[in-house]
Length: 265
Image (cartoon, rainbow, N blue to C red; front, side, top):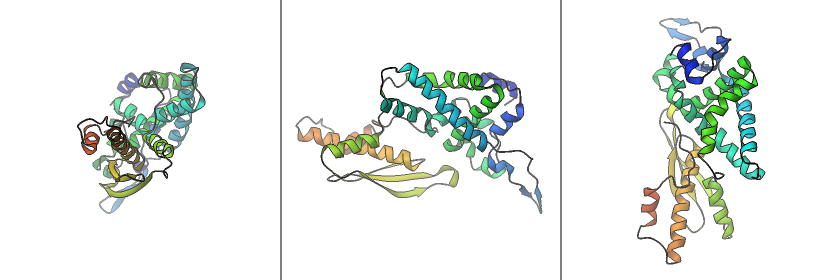
């Protein structure tokens, strides 16, 4: 992808192209690679990690300001849930994927072969680094315009404050005087760049439910959502209002019912 193509996609043209290069340089690209008996020296540049740190803070401020202005009557707790949802790794990876930033990422040959350019965590890091680079190159207004253009549609997608499935499950247990839900990592599989974590969620009086995802946090949220589906169906059945479906069938039919976001593919 050329610099002109990138400028058109992100609607910003860098004055200092070295900042753009830094934003897309993965740490692996800085490690000298072996070619035969010799090591090829890496270019004298920096990875995106420092820009990622800066971009994370700029993103948080701009999104917080957007939420504060958009939802003038909401309490701090609801605004915090919205902010957490909008700056989480999955949302950043989704934005990066929509912009096709993985195509521009500079990686080592080994990481390229391993498919690191499709890794949601790396895509999220690059998205934050790009925000940091735009901020340093064009100032706060340029970075704010970039964020507003991409995040305002995401804000529109959630008219009500998102509720994390783990929080809902905890509230369900507390309302019944039960111990807090427990989460246990039961399996890890896949290569380093594409790990899959399987987590079991359990609450007193119910069988554990397992779910898998690209991070333990997402797997826990999915397992909590599935367990909530099962518990809610069981409660309905006890009240004589359950549908003809079995709890397991309902969970399979709608595995993401309480899960707000999906990871980038």
